[in-house]
Image (tube, rainbow, N blue to C red; front, top):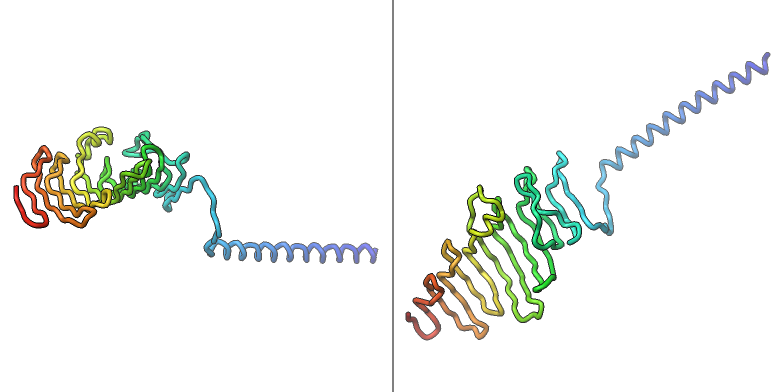
Length: 219
């Protein structure tokens, strides 16, 4: 009997010690998890085909993707197909509508790099760098479009929107072009590759009705 009592006592002590160890280990693990959760994780290199950035409610606000995983156009709950899928990133508002992005493509007819911010149904303003496939034609600059009625679909808006302002370097001619609501250039200020300045006022057919250039002015 004494031996059995001693064995039971030792067994109870071991069980009690085991419980203490389990509780202590659990507490330590909890502290480690909380510490890890409060720290920012840092990656030297992160490789992915697509990354979705969401807000606190889980709504997608930014997508970074290659051309194969680039998201379609999302406007007013509708999914629209893109004419070309570039690599780059897309911004979304709180309602899930696309509001701008960065696009990079080197498909025919040449390379295009563009940063755009949108009206509700079409591009509003963009920075662009376009280089033809053979490298003989290049334009880099800022363009500002007219604002189509919000009731129009993107397809309808594309047919009525007009480029109103362009500030660009086209084949080494620096120019500022102002257009009328129909998109027709009406005022052009330029400096050609030789450094010659020119100011032109244009009619609806694009003919210069007044010119100011180095050495004089005239119709």
